[in-house]
Length: 193
Image 1: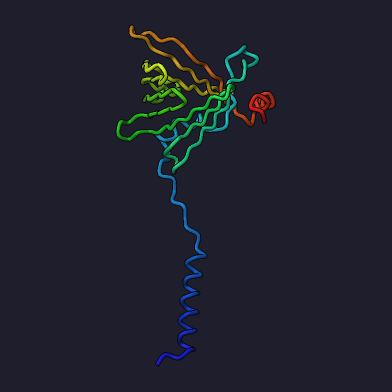
Image 2: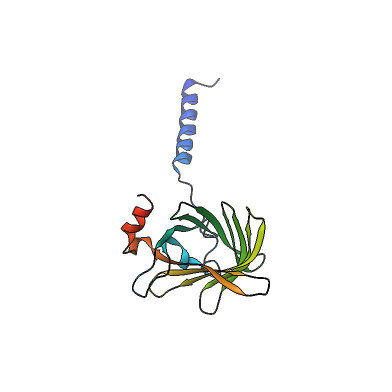
């Protein structure tokens, strides 16, 4: 026959071991995607106010805000764009080991872009592929170039291709780190903050 004392001791040991298991904090696994080639787009990671090009002394009008994050063990770079007019868009960016290149897939209200590439000899990220406009059911070649600048800004340029293989610039934005932006108050007011 089992005594009440034995039951209490067994219950106490059981609770003690459960408490120890519950008090142990699960460990986060180390980042899986470190070093080359996964860090090639790190120069774009951050909180940015984006402006049109201007003069050498100053950037042009405020175009929007972009938050770029590296997540999922450093394997995925996400983009969250909010334009000055309220338009939004998001992208996922990965170094795709199946094709050995960087790939970005962008989606906004009416625009889809899928392109691939990598760093050029000057250190700019250059992705080439195709853009699709939902409203008009049209496709066009598109090239995106992200160039890190010596002052900590990044220049983003989109060029659209035609049937003859010619490229025309359709967008240029200067990314200024939000924390270092001398026009941060203007950008915040434009966002209604």
